[in-house]
Image 1 (cartoon, helix red, strand yellow):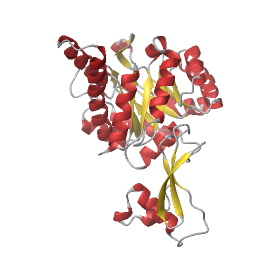
Image 2 (tube, rainbow, N blue to C red):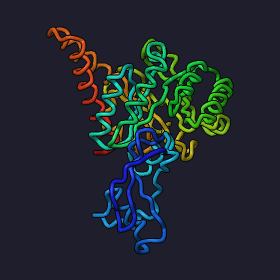
Image 3 (tube, rainbow, N blue to C red):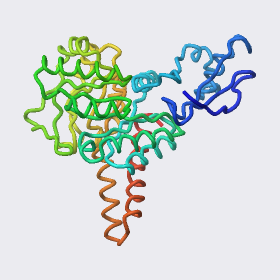
Image 4 (tube, rainbow, N blue to C red):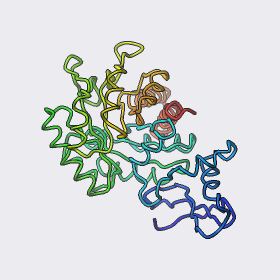
Length: 349
């Protein structure tokens, strides 16, 4: 951190700072506790005030809370923090700066962290310039931390490119490979990412559906085998695991979708405290979202509903004779509405 804004004192002699835009956790508010001032319970009371729990009398509980470090706040911190309070992080695929702006607007409105994700298709059309734009937008979020991740990449070249551009995390997707090859490749990508201080998400099982030209036949889709989870995690050292329990990319064939909850519970047991991720959250009913969070899922990926909103808004504006800038604005508005609704669903607000 190079600079911060001093917001005031949360307790006498205990200042609160907000990380500047060029820090690793821009916008994050944190307490600087000198240790030689205040009453014996002032640190716990400050934690209560900062978490909004003072009115609940939660000082004793707050004394055991672990706040994210201002110098190392990362995707892993974001996911584990969410799981510790019974919510999940929304991760939203974007393709342009309007998408990043929509996520930032939702973060500032809801006051919860989120991930902006670039699909490999975005790397072919935007590449590191889009990553730079996303990082700049994320740095200006004030409601909560907003981080950037490369999603679903099976390309070492793209992963290296994204890491060099400063992403906070990558999804190294070797799910199309045989298990032993998936382990070796994912472990190599995890070593690359960790060397740059980035988090790594992997996938076990092959997710069905179609998204941005990446398709998997439903008949060929394979669910995550709980028996392979522990050894895979030990071999790869990843920070999060995407599971396949009947979730799909794109639209679900039946409504409500049919998910294998017993499989998810078994995966949770084998994965220990490692954060679990569910892709294909577009179209999942709120009751299923809540059930997944209760089973330990702390990150949901959303793409289809956000893209659909952008397409519909842009088409309507174009049909009405709007010019490019107006279409960009209505697209951003439409995406922000969906992102905010999803964040409130994932965050229980």
